[in-house]
Image (cartoon, rainbow, N blue to C red):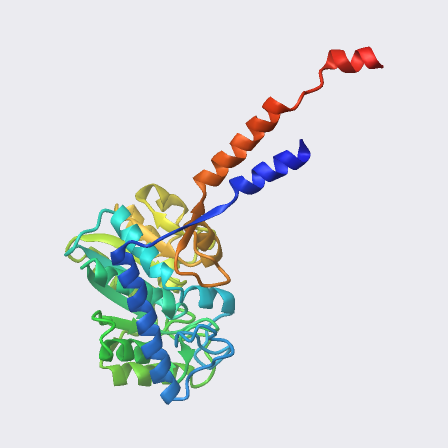
Length: 331
């Protein structure tokens, strides 16, 4: 009976690999092609690392640099580059009821450039109007190469035809979201990169002014969704609630536990939020393998679960079961 129970539990946990529909397969291929193009261009500039960027995406940065703000997980940064995230974002957009022409606001740090590109690629596939602002400081292994921060990656993707969206403005990131805590020369490197990109770098000694500038994006026209990628201070806020905030789709009812940043502000105004930060748990919930790349989602196998239940019923029907009376009469 113990063996039978273990077999049934094993079957119940079995995964079924679910194929992508044609639109999703095309998006997956687009993201993979964009990564190939970025890898090729970064290789020409000497900004690639085959040992750590094992999937050759061009989105994996350095273990540390002068524009690094905090510690980050290499495994999470690799997982963020999985093209399945673009497909998952497309599915989330559909679940939110978004249609071509709808407007979303993407608030991102540069810590998960692979994930940020997947969000943008999915949004463009669905025909959404995207307002984008990026905090340029990055945690380890993100877009933290001094010669290839996010403005460079964004420009390469646009030049190669894999991105139409252009950031409206940047902030520096780091402490106060104004370069605090970066090593000497870090802020200067980001300022130089922003100037070369031709995109405004919004700077203020007041975090509140940065929040107000981003709030203006959310309040403009009719915002259907706010997407947060990474953990920029103005987006997350200072409250401890933001650290434990559930990842994935959030709705206005979640506002009380969302901290005191732009995520909470958006929810309090009735705007849903897609929060993308803790990828390990989110990948498991989404059917995306955290450690390896595969071209399809994994879901619970209903057939395997039914087979487990059938096996259990079959054994019970064909094997005699002892009773208390039988045991007692033999003792």
